[in-house]
Image 1: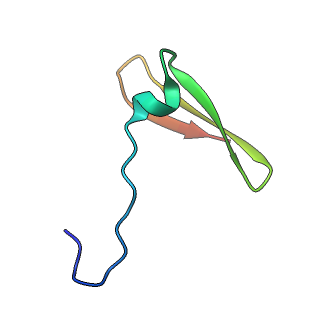
Image 2 (image 1 turned 180 degrees about the vertical axis):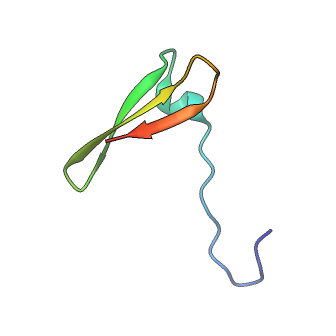
Amino acid sequence: MVADGATTVPVVEVGSILGAGREAVILHKGERYRLRVTANDKLILTK
């Protein structure tokens, strides 16, 4: 829930990031992070 006047947090469907695959690389301040779906269908973000 968002209080009046508060900034809303963007919501992104993970499929729009991963596409048909199970992992993606995300760049943050020149660093590469790997977002992947585990065998148990959970998300893991590693550097």
